[in-house]
Length: 155
Image (tube, rainbow, N blue to C red; front, side):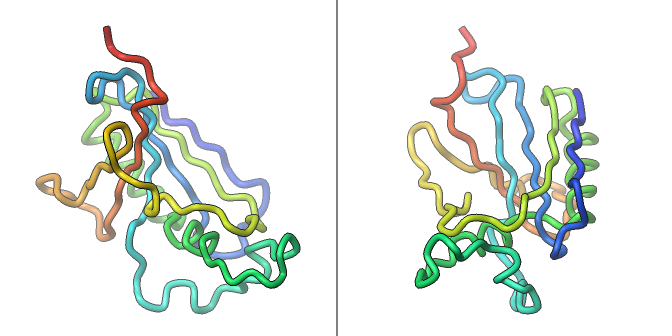
């Protein structure tokens, strides 16, 4: 298993903004399934001190009230959370994973991005709810979104 880290080019303007994906060798009859990790719930007050005009590009539609891009930021991870995730996945799932990739959001984000927690679940798309796994060690809830239609069958 590889751990591929893409460090931000500059200091992020807020504590959140780190992202992670993992690639599972074999999952639900598909191979090399990419799972996008995210925080489905925010703590009360999360983002209260953020300068949203610096984090989100409002130039596309200055009158827009959509806050979806805010949710994208709030469901991303802090640097400390990201390190915990990498350690957890490596220690628990290393034999099942092809790789773990980390990255950082590029600010300012465009308006109207769809957060992962808003993605529908169905036949091919779904979530991994890590908090229901026995002995889940992280202090925050983490989910993983996958789309099986994007991956080749095992056979």
